[in-house]
Image (cartoon, rainbow, N blue to C red):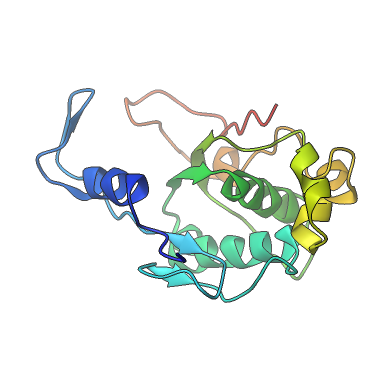
Length: 178
């Protein structure tokens, strides 16, 4: 129905935002939680970058990278990302694009941790069932999947004096996109 936050995801996002949430000893909200949507018909999104299934995952990843950079990384603020399905490929594209040092991408991204849920990191045979750009990119062996690094690292390791949440030194984020 085009409503990104319907059903399960509305509940999940509300849990992240609820002050009474007690996840693993953490009390209170997990900080600023926002949703990034990339289809024109998505509704109830905090940030909507209009597009359709003919827009490349690389282009969506570039938009996502700039949003993270503009709101967080440029101010030396790290973020954690939870991504579902193709959203995991969008994050992977964002990290890969920045690592390629292309001037069309932000100079750095401070993404500390990435969790992907049901992301087709190795592609999906279902990509052959339609003819859009994104379906082509989802097919195993596609140019997109060949371009996107398997384990892209953010620039967290380059933040001077960066310490992890429990005071231990952290060297980099890991996507573990296998």
